[in-house]
Image 1 (cartoon, rainbow, N blue to C red):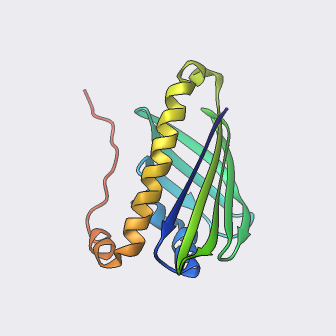
Image 2: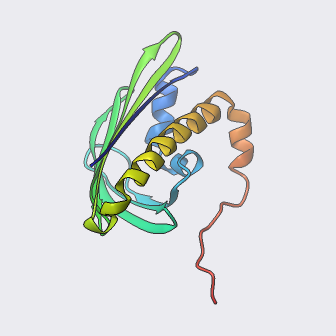
Length: 161
C-alpha cells in the first residue's frame, strides 16, 4: 500500500483554489503524469477516467468523485487493470489570507507492481509535491498560465519501429 500526503499554502482565496481544482480540464496543466482524462461535470458521483504515465507505462484508472463539498473538499476513488485502488482527497481551509491545500493519496497496485512498490512510493511522494508546487505557481501567476494554455498540448505517442 502506498500512502502519501502533501500540504502547501497558496496565496489565493479558498474559493478561487477550489474552482480551479473542480475544473478537471485544468489538471493536465499541473499534474505532470496525467496524460489523458475524461469526465462528467464534477460533482459527487461524477464518473472520471484518468490515464497516467507511471514509470513509462500507461495506467488507466476509472472511478468517481466520492466527496464534493464546495470550497472545502474534493475526493476521488478508482480502479484499473494495474491499480486495485486509488483514492485521493483535496482538503482546503483558509490560512493567512490564502488557502491551505492538503492532498492525501492512497494507492494499492496490482500484484504485477509488487516489487516496484518502494520505488513507486518515492515517485508518488515527489509527484505529489511537484504537482502542488505547480498548482501554486499557476494560481499565483495566472497571466503566465493563460499564455501557456494557448500552446499546443503534449501528446504521448507510441513510436513506430
